[in-house]
Image (cartoon, rainbow, N blue to C red; front, top):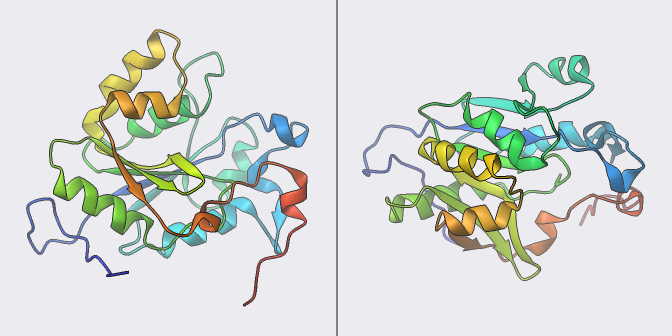
Length: 210
């Protein structure tokens, strides 16, 4: 696949500056309530794998936020800013996205979940290219043969208002919100890269060394 060199939306030479948000604020209901970010896999907790994948992007994000609602001290020890949901009742991952958008008033925000430790290193490149080619779009998200991956998305900060209104009326579907925002859906060939570690069997599978 051709490598895309990220540039500004107007095609200038200035390097792209963007922020990233790792979603680690879930209840872990499929994992007996355990905090996914700190479950070990391949010698490291998932949060460390996800941080490594973000830092491998081209370019790497300027800032990385972590959305968390427990074990806050542990997440702060990673050296990144921790954001908690602004809403009193747990409303799922979109509440974490809303909290992240509040921190990046100017920069695009790359959102990834903490339980996808194999994310492709060209995730930002591909999503940014889509937004550059569709300047009227406020979001782009990944998709594979396994279906849409709406929590792997790149958002313009101007989308924050629509998200708050969406949550205000009690909605929580990430995909429906992105569809309402006319987000660009970008296909990735490697479905395995988006493997979601949401059950204990996944953690017993070693990383392929081939």
